[in-house]
Length: 348
Ligand SMILES: Nc1ncnc2c1ncn2[C@@H]1O[C@H](COP(=O)(O)OP(=O)(O)OP(=O)(O)O)[C@@H](O)[C@H]1O
Ligand SMILES: [Mg+2]
Image (cartoon, rainbow, N blue to C red; front, side, top):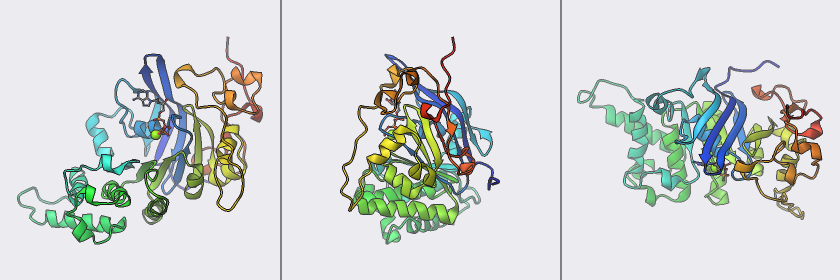
């Protein structure tokens, strides 16, 4: 199968570290990912495994003393890890938009919702015309586009709501407003970090529907970060499962869900409750490891039912395990586990 389009976004061996009192923490440790136009990639894993750090690294928002210690982030082939703050600001919002879990902390409570969406257009000069004060029609044009976007994200009575403050919106409407800010400039990529976690289930479904519609109508590629593997399985065409800063399994959603190969993915799947099925949920024993004191070898081995002594020594690469072809450029279904029979002992 030939790949349909060149990658929009590629992470190559991305490594992001935070110095802590107990030593350097590798929150993201050698992550490789490819995202193409129209793809929806789910990044899943328990709390603290590095999901948000991957997104913040892409946006150039890792604050000092944290830093990208290695690897490259290619946006349409151009490495963006070394861009200046100013160049990065141009990319954020224009090429890559981000929505977060808590919309109220992202919206500015002091400004009208409509004005905040309009600000996003102005910042990226989306409605160019003659310079002020000669361009008398600019405000009207911008407002028209804002109303268009508000309608697109399902904010009813957009005209009246343009002049509302964020606190006058419900949680679901606030999240829609945030998505509108993200979409105003027609970004190619939408990064969504737990965008529905703070919402009730019906609103959650509406927001997911909205993101799906944006993806289908505009080909916007999406990375959805969530700890909810059930949600990711429903929404995403590809899944990457992260554990302790590394991808432990990756592939098309069908392959990963129907034919999971890493014991951690299997464990996450056993935690998904199913409506109408009387089945005990089996939590994964133990806790996520402390990244400052990671064990040698496979970080999951202390919690793994299949662990053998050698799991604490080897370094395991992602191994091809499936039959689903190149999986949109992510190298097919692969998992990082000794059971998949390729490992090497540490050197020296
Ligand atoms: N600014 C920081 N300073 C120090 N350590 C950090 C910082 N940000 C993240 N970390 C560490 O990096 C690791 C990954 O954190 P991250 O927030 O990316 O996880 P996550 O998968 O998004 O978790 P959650 O599901 O809870 O949001 C954690 O161990 C965290 O403690
Ligand atoms: Mg997070």
